[in-house]
Amino acid sequence: MAPTGAGKSLILARITHGARLRGKRVTLVVPRFEILRQLSNTLKGEGIEHRSEEHTSELQSLAYLVCR
Image 1 (cartoon, rainbow, N blue to C red):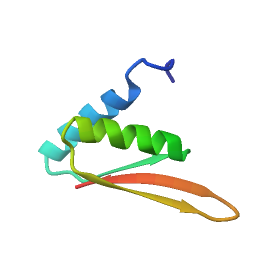
Image 2 (tube, rainbow, N blue to C red):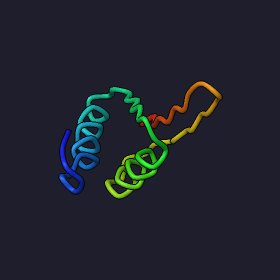
Image 3 (cartoon, rainbow, N blue to C red):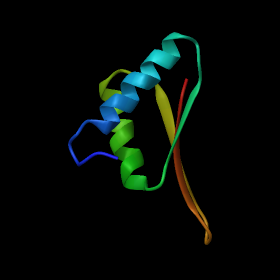
């Protein structure tokens, strides 16, 4: 946990990029759609190809990104 603006999304983007360079597939699960959009924008800015999906039901909300 770190304060707002500490660079958490950028750190995740860099870790994701490193994993992708090694041929790994990455799935990032986040608790809120706002975080999904923020992380997606960061990945896009770093040139990391990905897709994002949002799922909702009465019981849960799930947002995730799959980086190919």
